[in-house]
Image 1: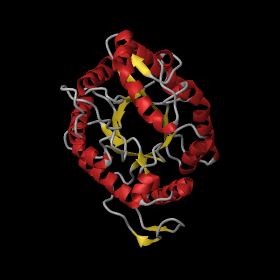
Image 2: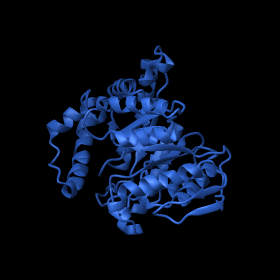
Image 3: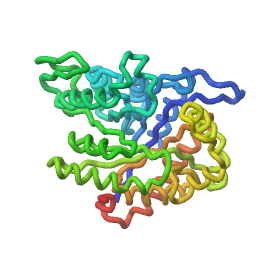
Image 4: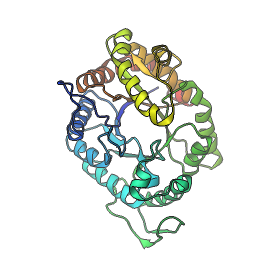
Amino acid sequence: MTIQLGLNTFGDIYPGPDGQMLSGAQVIRNIVQEAVLADQVGLDFFGIGEHHREDFAVSSPETVLGGIATVTERIRLGSAVTVLSSDDPVRVYQRFATVDALSGGRADVILGRGSFTESFPLFGYPLDEYEALFEEKLQLFDQLRTEGVVNWSGRLRAPIKDLEVYPKTESGALRTWIAVGGSPNSVVRAAHYGLPVIFAIIGGRPAAFGPFADYYREALAHFGKEPQPVAFHSPGYVAETDEQAREEFFPHQAYTHARIGRERGWGRLSRSEFDAMCGPEGAYFVGSPETVARKIVASATTLGASRFDLKYAVGTLDHARMTRSIELFGTEVRRYVDDMTADLPEDATAG
């Protein structure tokens, strides 16, 4: 049994050594360094999220990924996620096909609706068409993946008649995932198109997503599609000991929770709630390398997942600590995961 390990970041703005908040430009340059390190320590995937607000540095993941593609060798590069609803599918395909070219075929695009809505008014899309925009644009994107002549028409975008989209990928198709937050409709949609899914598990219990993963596989079979991989991602942090990891990570997770919570009506994150989320059943993958590895293997087995992505950047967590966490994740966590899964059959993550 093999479990791939990846990382993702939303490009949170955080303070530098002098305590002053870094510029978005510096955070982006640091992300490139972090991706190079991830490649060097042997991780499998590096993803960058898209946001359009002052507390995140990255609004154009593909641009940053293009830079990373030229200074890395083997790690796959993708979004986390691309908000397809408020973008143009043709331009998304072209940008990621370009990243695929620069990286020698290592690009993934992860499509989703996004949990933030700033991009809708920014690009002139009505929020009351939230669901319809994603469904219609995904339909077009699925046609684009054939890399042939496109004939498409819909209600919310101008039609395309007898046109091709360039550049094309060398493999003949862009590797595409659907990001799912735990909605049955979302997993059915992904299965309908025969696309792999990645579950965003940011609260509750990872095990609670097991039924959604099973439902997804049942839907694939129902639609006559080939089996597809399942992945999942969660916030986390790796340090030498469980106590060190929790002490160093808690202030930054609490900061993020409070910042977003003010907009969404959440209560403050207490230390007891945080510790529970770091426990064996919770959604935070925080602890020593062995602790984090055990949680990855247990969750991957429950979900039938073949990849776990650690959301390593949270709130005001600084570059030095993120760098050390990446090093431990790619070396020590990797070693523990490999040891724990060495005697398990390859289909142990089949659900």
